[in-house]
Image (cartoon, rainbow, N blue to C red; front, side):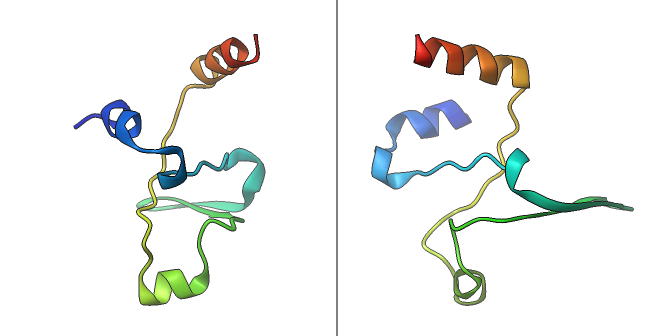
Length: 75
């Protein structure tokens, strides 16, 4: 299943979104990738320790496409 197919069938109260660019508080390159630290209220330390009722994914969108679609929403 493609991401747009999943998102199309979810209700608004079943998904939330947070832009991470402004929430990043640390980043460093490692041998296996980049370690990024960010602030969120989307889950708690207890969620990570005891398991959460959420599935967390990172979705990377090209800025040009993001800006284009946001402009359509505002007009």
